[in-house]
Image (cartoon, rainbow, N blue to C red; front, side):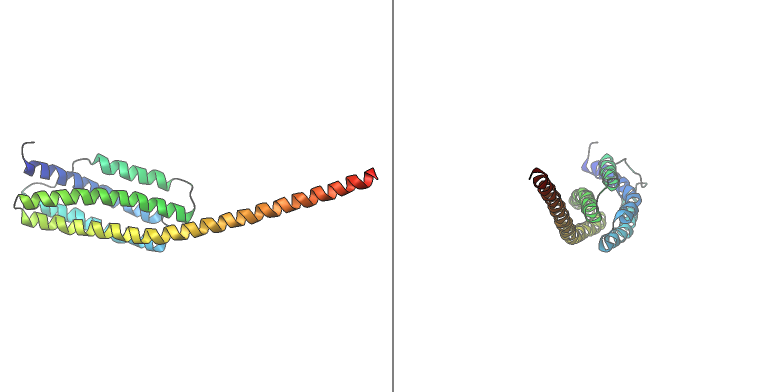
Length: 196
């Protein structure tokens, strides 16, 4: 690779593969979400992601190149990490929080990628290409902000649910201790009566 233009093409091919991987991963994330707002956020972003794939195809056209993927190992790893998270045995709120974390890692990867390639395209005078990449960048940032917003609500609900569960456990333990004390007291009384 001898030029920024070649590097730009390579990174766009990487993002093209990343977006196609996400088109397959997002429905699974939506299905694993118990929070309705989170599910809707994933479904909405799936539609945007399909648009990102088409936009990258336009970018390839503008650069007089055939749309071609370069396997994106980073996205493959992030998607795999998300898949492992969804296979864990977690309560609904904790699972939703974990899925949001996995999804935001993906968004931040894409924000970094689109931010860089759009800046390169601008500096090469490829304004139309830069414009398309900046549109996607803006949508990735919006998706990240939406996840942050929903994540705050999900986290608060998960915390409240956990505290409630802990209080119930504590009450159960206190009840068990009281029964144990009452049983021992009765036992001690019998022992005393036998002794007298």
